[in-house]
Length: 194
Image (cartoon, rainbow, N blue to C red; front, side, top):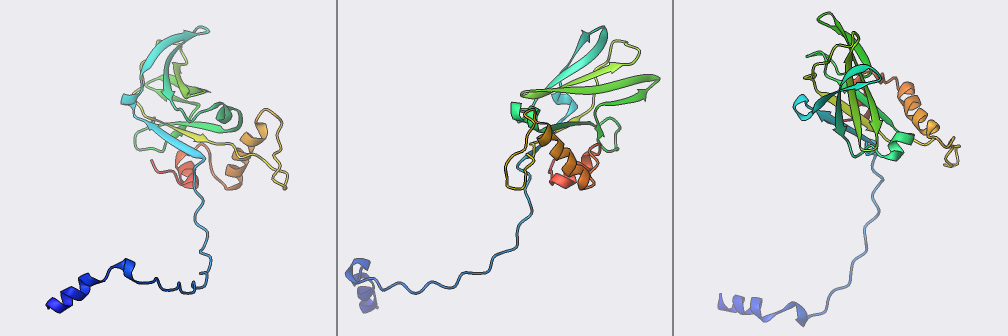
């Protein structure tokens, strides 16, 4: 036992020469392509408790308005991308795309939205112009980066106002049979995990 311990401790890595490296093995076969990602698409859900509504009057119409902070909405998104907004208006039903109008206890309710760098403004008003109540519903916002159209040689084709890039997003969705008014179809197509 003592002899064995002496042998183990008597040698150190610095005492001997390193052996020669062996030959590298053959390159393995290429794996199958992975599923396309969705780095160019962002989905945000805002619970009603996260939304602060205020009342305002614009051009004689009484509105309830709320601003949603979404830093992913950049000038490039506004010019070249697509922003879609969906509301959870009818419990247990799919998300409904804005703009939307529906009847609620005898009143026609109208929801719309506007976009600006850094966010979305939600707007709600009654058709009879009564002072609006604040809605207690969640909203989802989908931000899609524009897909620039190319001429086949990867040279971007543009009309300098983003129209081609925006339209390419809508064209792609239409050609894939995706209903843009159906959030679940958008989520499935872009593999969104909310």
